[in-house]
Length: 298
Length: 56
Image (tube, rainbow over all chains, first blue to last red; front, side, top):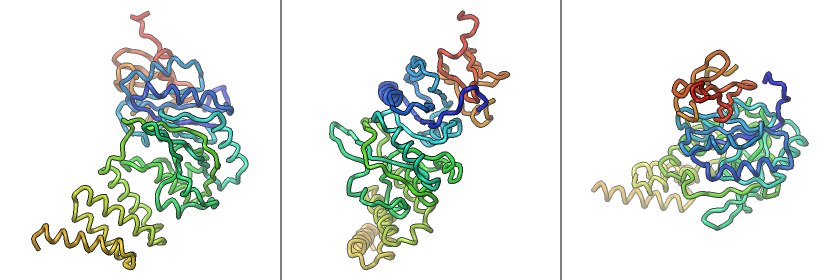
């Protein structure tokens, strides 16, 4: 902060791990933005593919590069980047992204022209996976015009990482939760949406290329993360029993897929208890309960 | 200057060993490459890392 150069308006944080072959496209799309008042902080999560050489070859002082001593995961790496950043607005990118030319301009303009209590803004993102394209969030999920979306977010995450967040918002609600094995972005949006309005730009402003080796939805980690999130926000969830019931039901189904009938039953019972008139929950609970008894020879 | 918290999690991108702070620079104990700190943030790009004397 004591440098001669004025602090940039926007800090773009990119965590990366062995994505040398992809990160160039992401960086080029950022350097080609119509809005140029930014710094990029690449946090290298202990890559072994010589990513550093590729970054070194970029002749632009706005790019900063930090190399971590151990692999700590994207949430930790993003937090390191946020702590070392200077911008008023924090943007996130992944190494397999490509931003549209006006992505940053539109999101910066949105926040500049919004009251302080609009904590962040998100947009549509095109997802390309195995050659097929889809939109995130799916159109039917993006029906609300309200900027108060905490309740909607409790149902599940529909906001991608390609958002722009006010720094003071992170100062207030904190950074990514490094204790979560997955779903750290959802958790951050949940906290932001509790205290701030969240803006939406009705345009597709980035493309994300899902590579086959991208972190998969590893079920164990996902279940663990979902259980932690339910615990963290249980007071909020209790205000909306129908949403909580759906989450319990989902956990029950996931545990069932893992072959853990005891856990499956535990959550299905919770779902049925919250919404006993829902025949689906009730039927599953009875069905699994019956199966478990057979297994145990009761 | 650089925070203690950040210093503890940084490694030399070349050797992947933890770097140490010496005066106002980071130094890799293995390859002796030095990484300057600009505006409170380390410059860890290899080209900017000062080459140790024996390479010069």
